[in-house]
Image (cartoon, rainbow over all chains, first blue to last red):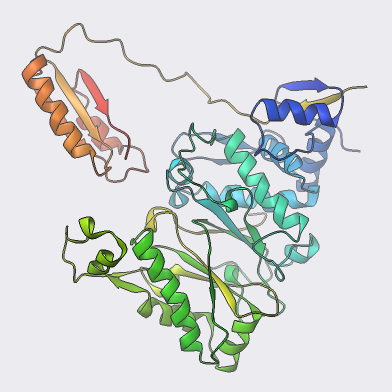
Length: 347
Length: 93
């Protein structure tokens, strides 16, 4: 059993787990779902597993200068239902989200109501039992569910991202409860996302991107990779017209059925990115057809807007069940105001 | 036997922000106005500047627009407002 270190947090004494849950619910310290009581012993066990001292600063939110200590991060991970060995993954996500280009404060506070989307790469995925296949964007794995939930509890309790207070989301979306997946590296012909983004092969890493709700597409009627990408680009154009026209990082989650088509045609992730970059464009005047005539005419209506600043802005992720010609487009919170950040685990 | 559980929240470090003491009068004052780059702020500030000057006899309004609504005011911009007797910051969509 781990020795109990000196904690900075206030200690509350409760009769049992049920009473602990009621206390946390009453104080608004949860996302509405029940929590696992963050006892001193449990938090100590988590910190021990990650070899962290309670006072270690994992990151500082750059705008309000809030420090995120290992102690508070571990408390959130316990509450979310993590196992101790998940903590290094949660820590890496926090580090990624504290990078200035992630714009954690703005994206958390915005009426836009986005959520952190987390992709995990490397051997840690299998070591902690993450899911990369069936039902990948939803429930199927304790690790996926609770790592994502830990981040929500940190935003809520450490950064004050309370709905109606600092979190001004008009709608939000279900990904705000938890939104964490693994990439299906074993069943993919492509380089893992983290390797494409500069992390050495063999090293586990996380990539975080602040996204709106996923747009699911279906195309099961072609073996032409260009036609599959045409459908992806159409979803992105739809987002540009209906939500936000501004360029930035988009993610596309590609399941096995589509990957096989790309693979047979010899297409890499780069080929997909380059094709989609050319196709995901709208003319400002198209806003007139979706009820936005009032704003369309403010500037040159023949101006063409790209969804991506360059092909590299598209994050291509191999994940999803083996059958079904479905894929998902994840649009950015607000153009390039918040960018994807990749962080090696243990960095 | 009781459970000892840890508080998950964290309060801000350092001194809590507080409003500066109010000016006795705005007559002859210099007022800084930080536009947060939201779409309606410019028009709102036009109205406010007009009222400040005509009804409250404010001497000068120094207006600056943040480059990005989601990020803090850049330090050089803050320094440009150093001479102001009062500062307004707008928020909202």
